[in-house]
Structure formats: structure tokens, C-alpha cells
Length: 239
Image 1 (cartoon, rainbow, N blue to C red):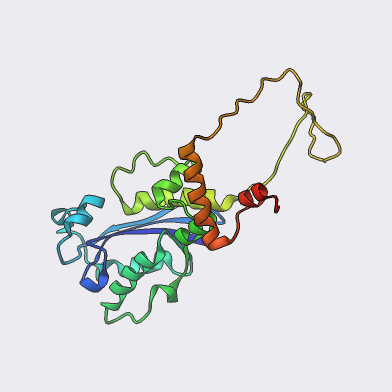
Image 2: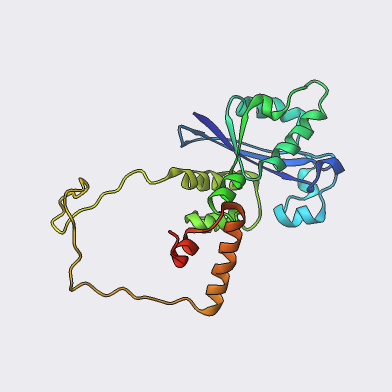
């Protein structure tokens, strides 16, 4: 299975207002392994970058002046991504911009969906973690992915980070391995391993009022989409 993790940077938020793509970054995965193959291109948008967007990615108008326009790089880009599954965080944003760019070219009548299938990791994260922050930085913290080099957004760096987050989100638990005190494998389920009575006692820290209130707010959000939560079922004696 070939997947391409993709990110873009743009002059602003809305292609319908004439905003354009200024950077595309892609990393390739085959059978859930990073191959080391990448696609990275800065693009002259033929318009100015909005100040709000500049504060996010730091890519200036002066830097983009000598970069190629989209029509000059589109063939190489399509060659890299075609017949893959695109993995994108908030896919409607990036796909919307890419389709807008394709639509400006008279010689191309296809959309990105004609070349690739699309998987939205933001949609996936919302289903896995309802009611929680699911932007890329939050997912990095949740899954222990190093994003310390991410002072500003950059398409290639964000694609590399998203690849690690996606693999962590979808990896699941492959196997469990338990051993007794002699190192013998106890994974066959025919032996109970009991903890020593001399072990250190676990430290129990009770939640304070503020934390309890925050917990109830999260449960309210969960129950809006998934019905009564298991925590409240247990508390109410219904589980």
C-alpha cells in the first residue's frame, strides 16, 4: 500500500478569495514504512501573502519572487502523488486549495480525487478523541511525537510530523508479552502471576474540585456524540 502524507502552506485561508498555494510538502510511505522519498516545492502564488498567513509559516513575498508558478510544477507533483492514498490533516483545506489550483489550468480537467484517494487524519482523531484538542501539536503531545523543531509551520516538516502521528494513531497494540520473575513467558494464559506483598504501595492522588469539574465537562462532550459514557454507567451502577 502506497501512501503520501501531504501538507500545504498558502497565502491565506480561502481559495474563493483568490488565495493560492505557496508550498507543498509530501513524504512517501509504503506498507506503513517511510521510504525516504519526498516531494517539496515552494511556489510563486502571483499574489501577496496575507500578514496572518505570514505569521503562521513565515514565508515572505520576497522569498517567493523567484520560485516557479504552480503550472510549471504540477506535472512533477501529480507524478509523485498519483495512485496513492493521500494522508492529510484537515484534508478539505488542502484538497480544496489543490483543486482550486488545478481548476485554474486549462489543460487539466481532473481533481485530486481523480488521481488519489484521501484520508483525513483530523476526522480520524476526532472520532478517536471526541471533545479533545486534535490539532497537530495536540496530537504530538498525546502520542509522544517530537515536534520541538516546529516553531513555524512548514509543509515538509509538518508532513514528516504527521506521518509519525498517523503511524502512532493507527498502529494499535500488536502483542502483549508477560513474564514471571524468572523470565519465563507467561503469555499462554495458564498461569497467574501474583505481585509480591513486599512491593511498594502505589501512590493514589485524588482529583481536586477543578479537575472533577473539567472531567464532567469532557463527559458531557463525549455523551453528545456517543451516548452515556462508561464512567457514568459505572458510577450510576448501570454497567
